[in-house]
Every structure is written in C-alpha cells, then in structure tokens.
Image 1 (tube, rainbow, N blue to C red):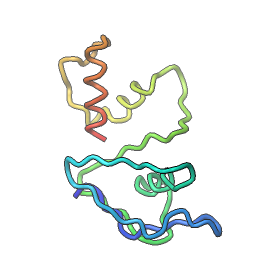
Image 2: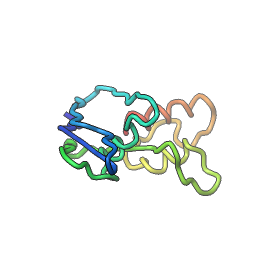
Image 3: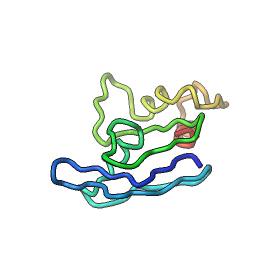
Image 4: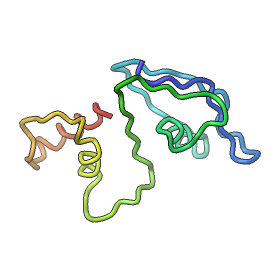
Length: 119
C-alpha cells in the first residue's frame, strides 16, 4: 500500500465537500481523480498532501514514500517551464539517465515519464 484514505470528510461552513471518502492505492497502481467542477477534487488532493486537515478520517502514506501535487493554479516565478519546475522539485527521486543534461525532444519525454513515475 502506498496511500490509504479512510473515511475522510471535509466541509466549508455548511457546504459538505467530501463525505466518508475511502480508497487505497497499491504499489505500481495508477489512479485518476475525475469529477465536475466543485466536486472536491482539489480539496481531496490538498488533504492527501497535508495542505488541508480533514474534518474526520485519516490519510496514511507508506513509510519511505513521497507524494507530489501540482495544483491547477501555481505561482510560478521566473521563466522556468512546468517540466523544469517538476524536475527541480523531484530531483532527489529522479534517477540519472543517459539523457541527463540533454534538451533534445527524444530525451524530454523520457525525463517527464521518469518524473511522473517518481511522484
């Protein structure tokens, strides 16, 4: 198990955004968070990464695992691309590869795939 979300609920005032949300993700599984605007996707992700505290329930991550979250609205400064920002944030978990330091298109996709595998 990499991530376990158990009975998580979150309200803002009288608006109940999440109610008893539970799921778990095993090693090597992939997951997507899909829903209409206002369904609570960003709220759930913020709870998972610890930016928000749930009203009830708990989030458990496996020992030694790290989580990454790229919010839909980022305050990026400077002239770095999203790819460069991701690479810098997760540089400690990205393995060195033959494309290291190269910027040609054939290597760019390789680095992005490695980055998302490490998240």
